[in-house]
Amino acid sequence: MSQPVTSYPTEIPRIRWCAKCVNPSNSAVPIGIDDDGICTACRVHEVRDTIDWDARLDELLELVEPYRKPSGYECVIGVSGGKDSYYQAHFVKEKLGLRPLLVTYNGNNYLDAGWQNMMRMKEVFGLDHYIITPSIDMLIRFNRLGFRKTGDMNWHAHSGIQTLPMKIATQMGIKLVFYGEHGWTMLGGMLAAHDYPEFTKRWRVDMALRGYDWQDFVDDEEDLIKEGEMECYKYPSDEEIQKNGTRGIYIGNYDCWDARAHTELVTKKYGWKPSPVPFERTYRTASNLDDRYENGAHDYLKYIKFGYGRATDHACKDIRNGYMTREEGISMVEKYDHVRSSDLDYWLNYVSRSPEWFDTIADTFRSPRVWAQSNSKKWSKRNIWDKK
Image 1: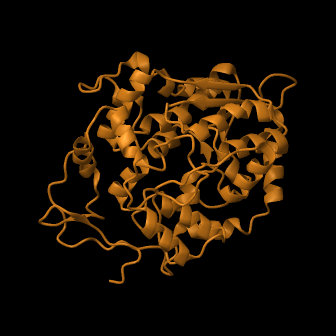
Image 2: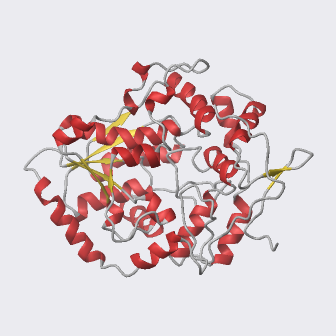
Image 3: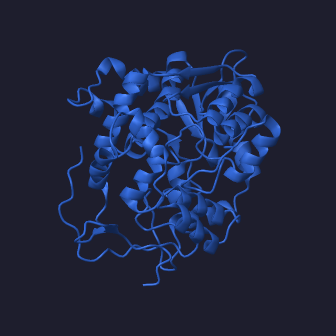
């Protein structure tokens, strides 16, 4: 478990915000802000607006041509049943003309609407669908352990979806695995718009899993998980990947990725359904229905660690795509980012722990770059709407 921070700066460090979107300079996905006050994610988006996406699609069609087969699965898609999953299946089947196998990691976090969307995928797309569900008892232990060790009760879910599609593809002799957008480039501008990053073991551990892997969660004294329970999270060896020739392809390298436009498409064409009720920590109702904590308790932890949340991420994307002004985005951030969502109580009941237990551990993950604590033990930080 992370050790408590024992001292904090007497003044809150200056956090900068992008002058075009609402990205903070201490973003969980590393960004840069240039001399004009614009973040790297916005700069990458500006370049993406100039790309000939029809030509990019032709490049991808040329890339996949050698992988076509007269029968059997030609690729794997890791899906959760969300809007992005539906769009990935649509893109691979309709635009590339491939026969995919759908693979899902079920971490026992689904909202009812998300589960219904996920269960319908095999029917609306006419595809085979593997759903892998670990032991619920183990998942409860893993929720607690992930929270204590990394500040993220959902680490198991990130690992599952980043592992099983590549693992199953490699075991079954399928060479192509498709993912959606390259999140670190879209959220933070990590790579240039003309780069073509592929999914790799190195990216999985260093970026998606924050430097941890399954070995780091075995034989904990408080929440014991044995190695034999960790098969869902064991990535194929380098030798297995090389022997099979497995490649992880990001559709976002070849498609003008726009989550709102995709949501409209899959809703009309495939009957995908958003959440029937609003979320407490963001204004969108179409994101993360596959995971009741991703928009809620998990994102509240992001706020505790970095001082911002999913409403900031959603506003950044919507500002760049022209759906929202920066001023409207700031209003969304002010309204949602700080909210302690009620699903935290649901999670604490799930793992049989108290709010005091949660707060004691969560506070150890607060960044001194963001937070300061007063003599009365109250936490404070600067905000994007502050005038000082």
